[in-house]
Amino acid sequence: MRVLIVDDSKSSLAFLGHVLGSLDGIEIQTCLRPSLGLAAAAAAQFDLVLVDNVMPEMDGVELTRRLRAEPAYRSVPIVMVTSDISPALRLKAVAAGATDFVNKPFDSTELQARVKNLLALRQAQIELADRAAWLAREVESATRHLVDREEEIIWRLARAIEYRDGDTGGHVSRVALISSLIAGALGLSPERCRLIYLAAPLHDIGKIGIPDAVLGKPGKLTAEELTVMRQHVTIGARILEKGSSELVRTAELIAQSHHERWDGTGYPGRIAGTDIPIEARIVAIADVFDALCSERPYKKAWPVEAAYREVASLSGTHFDPACVAAFERMWPEIEAQLVTSDPVRLVS
Image (cartoon, rainbow, N blue to C red; front, side):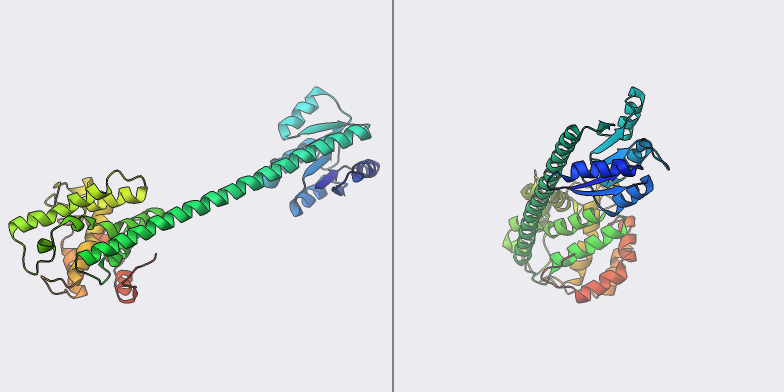
């Protein structure tokens, strides 16, 4: 344990150093001036500080106050060494942050006992802080492990849905990436962008409940078949409802509302404008854009530029104008990512 002693009297420093030097496990540094004491405290971490009260440059109360202003010394014991036993001084010293007092002339036995007790307290404090830091790291590691497992399940389930829908070209990955880029351009926090990135792949999870004859039909759907197909949003919301994590709750919002339209003509709730969750408004653009660019049993893939123009033309009707503007701002990066991204899984 390291002890700093600041006193303008050489004889006092010598006596204190001699008395405390006989204790085991202590390293002592002495300073004759407060400014040197502050410099020493800044250069090294001490576990106990003894300060004289009456000194040039500044008194012990001011030195204590300055030490306490430093984060490294907010909990280190500071002992005021003084011959002044007046209550006024002690109140000032305590207010400045003094932990204890030692009266002049010194009693060697009392001084050693006080220092040993304060250093034992400091040692326990250090061990407690180390234990708390270890526990925090363990909790962080366990939490990260749970998050990783949750994300892995999300991606595996999304990939299963994609195969169920007859597509193996990375639609869910591209929707996730484009959605996160739009979210970022809208000024959403990195944490929320990441959440949308991970929740977006489950936007069509409800298709698992749609009959093969409807889901894989190569031609145009009849009115009855279209009604059945549209049930996938309700099925998806039911699969994801009452989630215990924010990720699953966000995925539920997206699954439920990504086919709503800005003008209120979408489904299933025919809600409009900002009543549609922002997460769903974002994913709606990414989903439609990538669907246009993808080949399906019932249609050919559109050229990328034609799909881009189509999304832009639907601003204010199908899509939130602010989300379309964000899509347009991010277009160079989206276009580049479409060429370079891994179709199996994108990692933000």
